[in-house]
Image 1 (tube, rainbow, N blue to C red):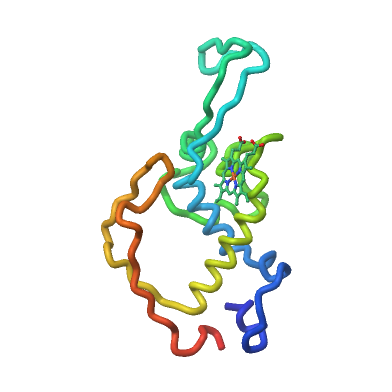
Image 2: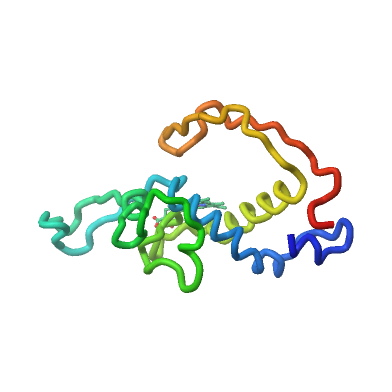
Length: 164
Ligand code: HEM
């Protein structure tokens, strides 16, 4: 709302506006934590190692899963709770929040995805109120989590842009 208020009529969003959307990005990150769109990815063990009592030999192919790390209460207290404030301050311990993966093969589209998500959130919140038409709609994993019926909503344009 502060960003909308700072704009002249139809002035468009700019890169520096996105950098100010800290709370919106906290919300988006909390969604990415609870429902990571990417299941995980593959890696190869470059050395023998012991994980939770299991010996993983060098050369084995591994599949890491973001969801398991994101729900680990050692890193995210009360992990099922939707709490965007977890991302305040310095944020989670490195490699515990991995919706975009991590290390040299981390998703190269992550900054672009951030931009697209923030622009979408900003425009929908400032222009519309919406109603979920199927309040109990399930989320199916195929394997990407997707609303089972396509998430139909009814959009109600604000008479006046919020905040103006
Ligand atoms: C919310 C949106 C997105 C999510 C959650 C996501 C998630 C991921 C994940 C988990 C990986 C595997 C990373 C790893 O192995 O450590 C990945 C890889 C990749 N992503 Fe994304 N991604 C998103 C959007 C995008 C976009 C918008 C692009 C391109 C414009 C993109 C391009 C890629 C590419 C090329 C790779 C392979 C990188 C490599 O193996 O070196 N992604 N993404």
